[in-house]
Image (cartoon, rainbow over all chains, first blue to last red; front, side, top):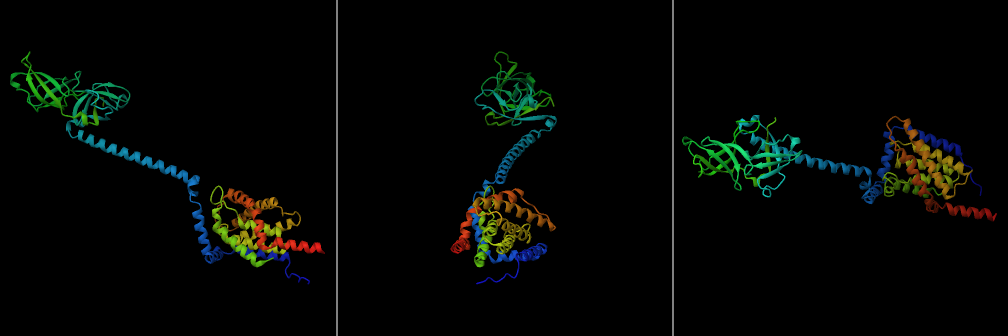
Length: 269
Length: 174
């Protein structure tokens, strides 16, 4: 059986197909897009199943991609950054709250304060505190330290980033004070545990110190003449050896055990 | 040439290329073997001249439906048709039946068809972005590795091997 001759040669066939390809190439995409959409519509069932299987088949593909890892790391860092900023914001709000209480006394408006945290357990070290501010923050020896808007002691030792505070109950503490009720002044020192003592020579017409009278610290370094409460009188009695001298026992008005932060009165600013 | 089986094969390959082949990938999920490229080389090597021309252009048409370049139709019709025909002509000079040579042919054909397709796509106005490493290296390389192993099943489906054996037997009996 002889084969029928082909009507179209290979070259013509090739030429026709190339022309067809060229027509498709220069046909507007809006028209050729219909062919592609028609294909997708005709076989949408198997194409959809294939897509589902493909996506199910690579559960960790995204996790393994470098881009995903990079984004995950960045997201973790940002989350940590947000947490740090939130903590800083809360700390700043707390400091503002403390400082606003300090500013409630009008005479203190010209004072500047350095907030510091207590870094030791006050119950473990008698009569001293360790705070987390030091020379680098402008803290100097002799500056008054406030707690609960009252004088609790003075800075006795300073390093670059920490400082030691000698409380008013420390036997080596000496602070010039004035008793609020009678206006008499003297030197307050520490002595008994938890209490300070004032020896005041009193004239007869000044009256006697009464229990509950406030005791103010005077001569705040840098701000002389600005009285700050330090304690209140627990009891008083005349000195047996010198009847003109009153021995006054003072209880600090600040509960050191519950204290978390203190404010150092910056005398150099 | 069994054209019905060819049509079924091309339709199945197009559907697989569009959706199912995403399961088989290397390095990144967008590097998958090109089934239509593998079929292009297969038919260019195993068919006579007229059939090779027709199959090359039809496979190019299917490629433009499945994975169009910049959404256009035409670039892969022309590039597949042109290089498929050229490969068929080359096969008359150098036999490409051996599997390593078919793999090499797939790699080179993948590179050439991708280049020409993108060049033709640039003829049309519009912005085209091309991942050079994927289109010109990884995908043809992966296709070259996978392609030779598909020759047997495709040949079985198209009955090309049995037809050749019958022809050789008939020629030797003469």
